[in-house]
Length: 132
Image (cartoon, rainbow, N blue to C red; front, side, top):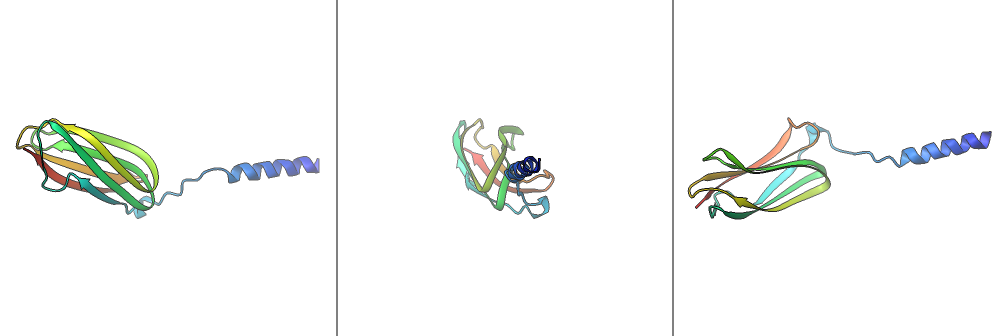
């Protein structure tokens, strides 16, 4: 009986030690850095063509959630939207080719955002560019 109890205790210890715990930073300390590589501020892109979106998300611990939005500020249309729970260690890179449905002269905006648990506390970067 003593050995059965010992085996049960050992099994419980082994299984509880194998549980993965997410060591995410608290929302107050989520100091991620976002670098938008493409497009850059003031870029002029061809209207009705494809463009590259390249954004780097970095944090000292985890990158939890990311969001990218491309908005046509002239028409108010959302041209691209992605929201992901990426759960990445330290670094996450987005490299997307998207089609821009815009007229010459339209003012465009890319908003890149990341947050941990509390979506109210976000790190955000924005670039403005236009279509020719």
